[in-house]
Length: 511
Image (cartoon, rainbow, N blue to C red):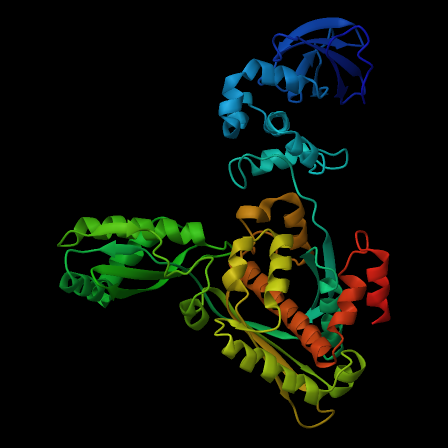
């Protein structure tokens, strides 16, 4: 609620808990000073805000000595005063505005204004990028990401979220949130989910759980490197290594350490479970402590080259992840009767099986693909990752998937379809999972935060659901390809006619 500024050069409104409306006059030369005028008793009091923003919680003392907590909203032009007072400091250090101003919300608005002043095209562009909204807690959002999720913030990106389901997994029904801008993806996956649920559901199993970190160290000769690799893998060193690692975490459990020699370098691969966290930071911290202790007590000099030597492997395609796994290794399957294949998926068992062999096995082999023996696993992984606050860069390895479709005998016939995904890297706490929208999506799946009394089960369950969602997406898309329905579906659901010339639309529709 705003009051017309009237004769006041800068005026805002405080909405109080008891319903009293309080006006605030801002000092033009000193934005952190305000004059508070409570309408109940017309008492004036000068207040020094803890920051430039007049949107902080204040205490307004009335004549009755009663203290009421109030919040203040200021007009947008206060930003100009902030920029004026910051001067060159704000222009030269835009990444430090949160620290300089002391208010995350105002820092974002100020940073946007500074960018707009630099180039006209930026001003025009930022008009389409929201930074605040009447029905979105922008202030709470910027406070939640400060120091943890993003720097140099200039707004937020609205992303549509669709729901797939019900998808029956291990006897439980889920409605899976998917954030995507690709039309037809949610609809197609929903068709696969329907086919799976009509067939009795999917079985999804975590067969291995371990996040990895692979540091690189150097020694003075290949002989010393080989000797060190043998030493650190020996049973005699396990107790001390495990003790060092465990001193940094309550939930991380070191499983094993392997060493690979390349010239004078030794690449160590540590693998550990990480509870309900994705685990990169947890494992990295433990590994760093192990290396500190090992370097100090080993008999010859060792130099740490990098805490991550790329044999982890994080955010890059690699054969080691494909064969050894990283994060959660999951297998998921469903048996789809021939009647469902024909009525819901609109294809035949024979055509579906043949297509999978030709496309996902032979075609991917000819391409030399690592972990790419699938139709579009990355589509599903990325959509669920974005919705649930996972690291989207880890889609690179998390989408590694082998899709198998085979005919089954007996009863109604049909197919057994499975996906084998050796490195789904997910967590249900930490990172982006704590943001309000992403947290809500995790809550939809019943895996928000840590599993009470059984740490690690929520993250495993999320990985199982993701694998089942991939299964649904693979089943539907491969069926569409087998029946040659892919183009018609995308023409209906994945094209915007907004900028398409009419004649082109008519050509598309006629074909």
